[in-house]
Image (cartoon, rainbow, N blue to C red):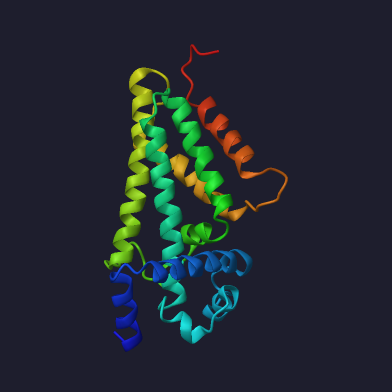
Length: 219
């Protein structure tokens, strides 16, 4: 680790409010830059300019563009998991929970556009290792996030099948993978400020899924 890296780690560990405030300002600036330019084109120089500091000063708070990207993605993904946990805990029919999970995920993709899509679609070897083969902390974290979210969706589907609110010949895990895959694939076509916003698209997706999962005796 470089001398700057050691000092950066020491300040982060010291829980300095001023340092934390500056880090948050840098992350917010990075979000704006990633949204405007995309991860591949954006640079730390762009982030430094956006936050109003030199690139040399920026290194006291962040080590690389990839590290900064991971930080902003972490906040978005963990917020998605927390939102899903709240939905699952609500005393609602499974069909309504599943619809809300779909709606919330699409809304998150719009709110965090485009960097959350970059997280979904990027070749991870370019931003920290192939998630299928690498075993570093970042790759482990990605797998844990994916598993947590998958388990929540699967739980809702399993509850719906058990209580008769949902009907399907497929196992809950297959349905969960289909739902998550459908929403994640929107990176190929969804753009903010299009003909429909994310809330409308999410609601339409939910209706489409639930129509195929309705019990036969439901009108």
